[in-house]
Length: 232
Image (cartoon, rainbow, N blue to C red; front, side):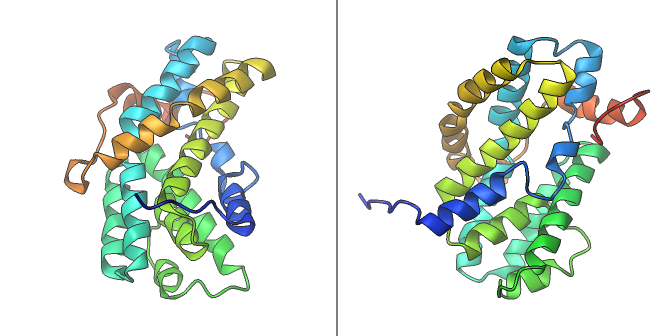
């Protein structure tokens, strides 16, 4: 068995930056359909909030986002830029509503813009992605992880945390939840991260996708919600 080396201090800091709610990509402005689920009463307390987020993580994020993220980091190590672009198109095609697609593309474009503002040579991958008409947040995240040599398992764990924290932050405002309830949710949901990663590792590219009709419907109906705090 090959022993994995722990992340160096700078790599860990860069991963924490990528996963931070303070990252200026607008993740805080998207509820991923959660706002309308609360409007309908599907999510109405701390228990149903946890169930909603966990289901999303295990049945959607694990079988789509994490699979593509891991593959993109791997192929960037091999400088396969054509496959990198194809996977970018694939993950965008997996978005089940206009609002879910909007969230992915808006965050992807913002992260690419942020990377371009750094006085660093991210190489050909960033140059190519900067000229794509549409960039998934997954692709931008993979590109940053590749450049900073963040290993795949750490990248997947970090991405899971990003999703969980943004969802809990949205629920804190919308359900609403108390700060202690929110922190307890972060503790319990983050324990599901390893299961999500393992499920992703067992899912092939030809098997990716999710089937969560309530999430798709909630995100679509959110477009016409009479009042809302979030963009999706």
